[in-house]
Length: 266
Image 1 (spheres, rainbow, N blue to C red):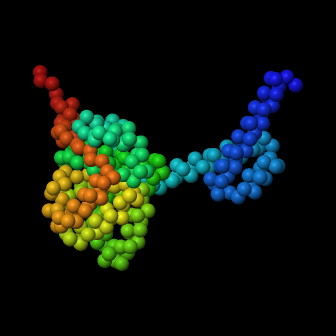
Image 2 (image 1 turned 45 degrees about the vertical axis):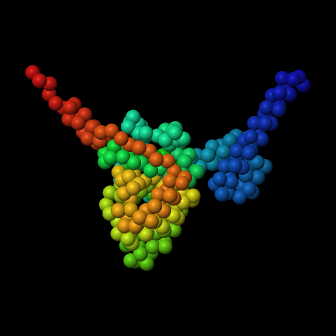
């Protein structure tokens, strides 16, 4: 046999080995026993193996898509937002954190936090939701709450005797988004429960906070200066602060829409 014939034979063998590996890997991901893959290998024709591999991969893709839909539904986003069309011109990034790192969501896998700080209407919530949506698409467990909503939910759970169950559910998340942090004063009990959530998240998951409240004023909102300082310490130790400035994003776009419908003067 010539070199060309030997090369073809080697190529065919390598292709079969690769397909066998793919079949075994797909069966493993579907939680099928190795005997299923062995049966295919020993009794199926190459065409049948190819068809089974296609079926397995289609099932895996369908499961992944269903998982993403479940994660999106459970996240509790108030609306659907993405990075597409988001204007970053008013966002000031810290030196060691970039837009690319934000949109890749790698910081979530590293259990780092984001604090989105700026005036009302500057697109902080939009950006937080877009990050959360991307996290869900990547298969990461995510929950979105306004702080007021979460405090009420925690208080009700404690009243009903289900607080530990709720806390355990929050502990299972990869990302918690807490919107409107500090917009409304929180009583001491609420502050203590929020502190527990922040403490439980430390180096275990990522938190994203949106706020218009500078750090020096957190104590007045959460009723306890020391507790507020401890929260800041835990959030900032493995976190990044993004500053949203400029005009109100909502107001500016409302004005743009208004300008678009104004009839030109005759």
